[in-house]
Length: 359
Image (cartoon, rainbow, N blue to C red; front, side, top):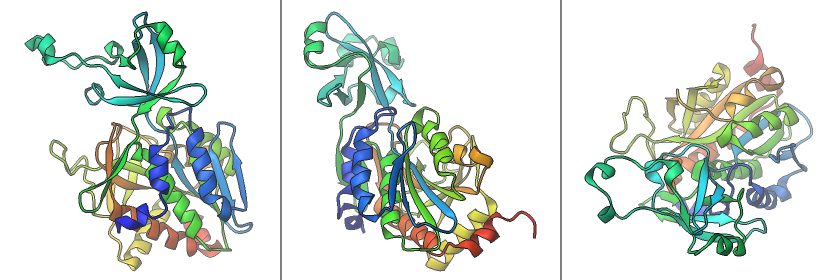
């Protein structure tokens, strides 16, 4: 039920917060408050990834989701008060024009702005056929000069995110900013809160700077050194017009997905089978996908510190890396139920079966 997502407001708080790669402090603070009552220890790696632990014996089981979102950074302020920017993470320029944004100043104030667009009345027919290049775009905050921009606290190097919002969508959907991957962060926090297994050391990890190269995954993997890793992320739902169902087979409402392969990761076979068996026992439908052109934090957790079994579980998501994305509440709730059951039944015997290569 969608009410399960909405009951404590955690996902909404996370989606509404600003957390562009390299500026994740608001997310850290929300997660700290959400899991502190359930954690034996909370630490951070050298880049600022959030690491909570419960339990003191048994295999180390890490649940990982990245906390950063794609956004922008101020690169230049011209004399007329218009702001030029670079993208942080991957954007498609056609999804950016005329979108509302927030610039976060050094003291944490949020300055509203809009990515300016040229009226169609001022475009030739040829102009209309060509997308505007990102380097030609600018942000308008209603300032008349560079001095007015500075007076409002905006400076080169400030981070910019899409204007925050969160709402229900259709019969069972959630539409919001930054569901990639605040939805994963909320899932990890909820699993951590629900898990009651004294036979494992359970870690909830929210990594930084995933969208710019899986950086927090590398540093947090070195800090935690888990025995297995379960990465929670979002992947493209292909159930909209214009997408190939072979390349993008995921659908909203058809269950959580296992990412079997991406640019930097291959799902661990025995861990994958354990997830499949758990889902079958619970009557949970699973989807499956591969991804040739991108990567998740699994691409660092699988190789750092000697390597370990890793699996990436995903929420099918429409309109990734844009101002608004959509997930299905049923998928979200099933993913939590699945992983809670998996970690509650994990122990040394199961771990031995998952990790042995011979016999």
